[in-house]
Length: 525
Image (spheres, rainbow, N blue to C red):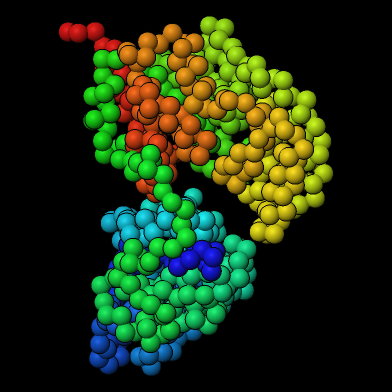
């Protein structure tokens, strides 16, 4: 599994990523059994119940819903009119039965919820840290809702689901269309991608698409059917897939964090009866990562929560955005704001600082912007954002790996020509900053001093999601002045002591902090 050979992994959702295959099987069985029973009552002909193991895997698993209905009915010698997607669930058509199955599925999903497989989440994290792109495919039109319920919607670089097939004219499995389109979305050749599937039709699709490797997943069953369908190997747990031999060596100073939700009592005990200073990143922490940064708007609920926290304790927003930009996005009074990764700070009571050495780099930033802009504007999907103390080159919407490489080469050339600047990375971004000894970690230390906190009497909680936040986590860890919390779907190694999986967990954690602070502020009875 060397990344010299593979550049991407494409995973099916049901049964590989999320524990919904059993829910689908139960929904299919209930729908088919009820329908077969109604035919038996009507024509007096006996029908065997639907086999939720063998027939599910053979006729419907991994296929678009209506194709699954046709496939199973044909195996029983039953032919029905196809109908239309608007058919009512009680209509005796292929679409009507498919819509009935979907209604039952949603009923069961609402009743039982959805969980992700821990081994898959862990393996995806390993692949992404090794530089592989990861996509999700599904024949389900409920893919986005299921991933959102499992808190995995923002994990994947590409998604192709049952809503895309009709729109794009993609054939369902065992045709390889969905996998080929996912590879195209990731900008890789099929031979450079691993396909991971638990369905016979999915394995057949991966083999027909000439992908570099097809991995079958047989969680609780024999492996023979997947091997016969064309899997190169079959595993019961994705952690059985060997790691790459050329992964970068780990940093022994990094640690595997604990869940801040599961250990909230431990955190509360450390904070209780001490001063609390709360430092928060914006993008990916208070709001989800979006394709266009200007669309990362704060919800009213989160804004109200920040205002309530600011009435109880010190709250600072530390962001890579320009300070004026993030101030306008948050729009909450009595907060401190550190913009451009801490080069520009302003807060209550006249607090103000612009890093002196960084100000001397402003002419070079102007020149770098002048050189970069025409190149960036010539690449489809790329966007240049000028901040006072930085230049951000966004490539989230650049579809071609060649274009991303060309973009990075231009950025590198400009940095080389401007020795007073440095290049830093982030989530789908190259950023040019003044090459001075300053980052979010220094900004947090400066703010602690400027706000008059005694290091021995304050607990700083810093929550962030990006590599630039590691500077702050490292400062808090080695100075033992606070608690770093990384926002990430995977528990990757970090300088942070804890993690929160997404913005929803950030909200829940902040809510619990607010409740604790409010309780402590109540006068004794």
